[in-house]
Length: 422
Image (cartoon, rainbow, N blue to C red; front, side, top):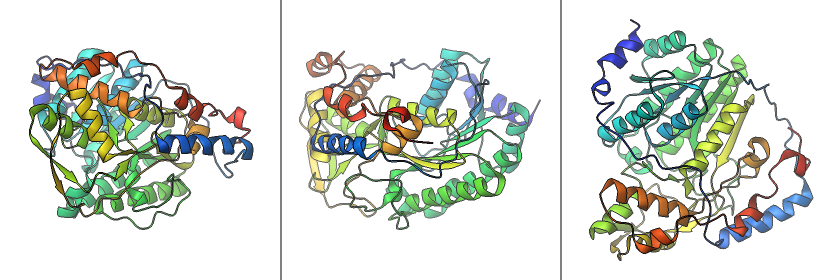
């Protein structure tokens, strides 16, 4: 029995697979709400880009393979990782998940995510290894034993604010762990190495839409600094070892099975219970909230289309203010928030908003789910897990279609239509 297999067999997960199940929420969704001001601005900018026909020069695409993949998904017991593993398994890939099941948030939730995928897909193409990505010998054994062809590196210490309190663990997990994986991937000549970066690398950018072409040398938190470091390391390994690497700058991901430390879950939970919630700032700050199914689709598109080295934004392309965010949650929960307003916190940025033009052109990515529709599903998932009834606002929103405004935003996404070369 290999060490990796021993890790699995000796894990407490082995006795819990058949005891824990999750509701299976369909991840492909439609958009229902009208465009907000950022979306309208983005739509106008896309129309202008149609006439300029921007060309991405110097882009080196590696020949993609149509063979069945063996994908190592790091952090695959977590929020984004478990959804990504689910998608890959559904289309027939083999998936090996490694996750250390740390106590940053409930280990039971992570176990439930693993159980969800095992119960849904069975053990034939799904392997779970409980372990640390910084463990060099374990990582080497996983690559050797399972003949990994692709890496989807989503494991990381997350969170801007906690990184300020404990920067050492962020450097250890995020930088050392990524270096360890890059070394193994280069040694075993994997076909593509896709990794999660973050919109936090843009720091306090004042651009209307954050572009991959911006210089991002001024992070404002240790978490952001480690993500920037990972991008630099990946570029180095790509250059030295011809390892195809793609970094994905995720913009505030939310949705079903989300982490309990994230704002969407906390707001829904506190408002549902009538408990006091903390609002940092005056409510004017905004985030480009991106629904989980859109993030997963973009991630899998990156896995399937290797480049020598690229970085892409994965976002919705429009911002939602904190004030509007809370109002939408109040609408779906059917209760008013009890707010305690506090000053902005160190490390926070006033706004984020992704330019997704590059991802649209080179990956065929488009975000489909509006924030309102995504939060409707998130509240519905919360209600199911807690035995609560859905409000009329939640029920009335069911089945709403894709908005015309979003269609205009993503109408021109193909390389051929734009006349772009890759």
